Length: 395
Image 1 (cartoon, rainbow, N blue to C red):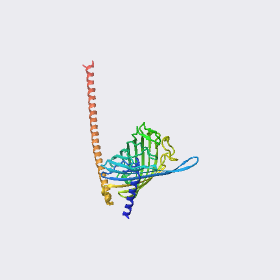
Image 2: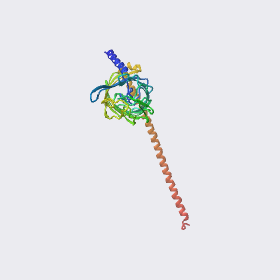
Image 3: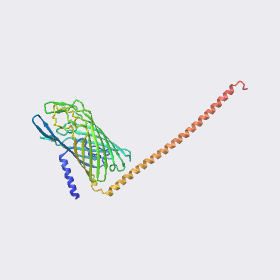
């Protein structure tokens, strides 16, 4: 039965790998599907994450004498490799395998763009419920076509971004086994000045101002022994909008409920749905030189996501038993307690030193007060003697 289940999972994995692709907001490391956690992978851990999402809708062209229907869809997927270098540094490489662009002839990119990410995470006080980190990301334009309908804006240039991460866990000892909350706030620079958008006519539009945007995300995960339940909000705000002849120049906001099935300790399957909360009818694109799809929203009003995450390294992850896990947790707890005791002793030692300094200061103040009184007494005595010397009655 286990062999049959594993074979089925491998087949699903291969299907996702060969047919679908990724977006900039997809997270292949620790955290949720769209929102990253501030935790880095443990040293020596290598994970592979396959992600897929799709959307489709039928649009109708209407004229005075006829009607015609056209199906538009958005299908994409990627493979993402994440590797933990040490306790705080993680790198990720994510090539987009396939990106659909809604055209009948050669209407796809194979491959699409390439993403690189450097994560500095798992920072925070020992035993604290809060962790923080940051991600530096690059997007390389390896695809043939860019600026696609239903997808986030991309100009075909080398883009870069910086994202701040904050994570809270109810149980600092075993953070991923307890309720945890993740907050992301990032800056994305499209580096697109001078880029030209080709249209269906001979005219082109050149980008004159750098397109920039803020990306944000908030995620909640409720883990259980077999399933993880999650809720995510993620979106963007343009600081400098692209030209009006580009697609996807509006701000968006998505809500994503999801569930993850932990088939094995080294493998999990994720399913979620994106629901567009921002207005689907608010379209700022100028369709003078680009094709306007019939009765289509500017972003997908819904989207289905599927993900498959596998731990490739270390190979011991496939052989770990419940006893090993409990012993590892006990060891982690012991190390944490030792650190807390050490910090407490250092604090107590510092407090003792502070008390000693306060005591010495009080002694010095008493000595100064005593010296002040002696000096005041001598001053009064000298003044009295001087008065007696100058008194004419005094013989």
